[in-house]
Image (cartoon, rainbow, N blue to C red; front, side):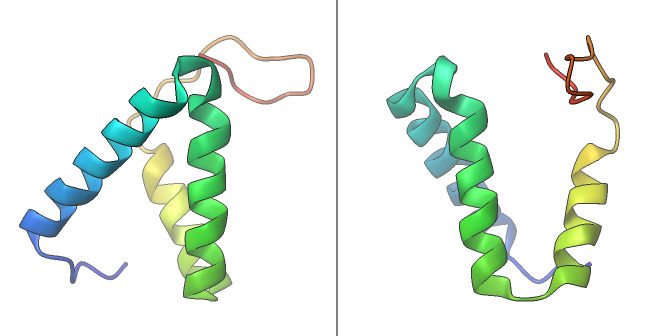
Length: 74
């Protein structure tokens, strides 16, 4: 995976995401983050990179209660 972004920029991304999550509210957090991922995936236009990013993001997250559709929920 590309590790090219400077730490300062990663901090800025984190801050921007945190502020946007506060703006949309906790009830819309999952849909907002999904939309951000889809917008970024479209801009990247590299399915292998996106698949690797999704795999990397799932690391060290314990699954919670499973929903009826089989998706993991908090």
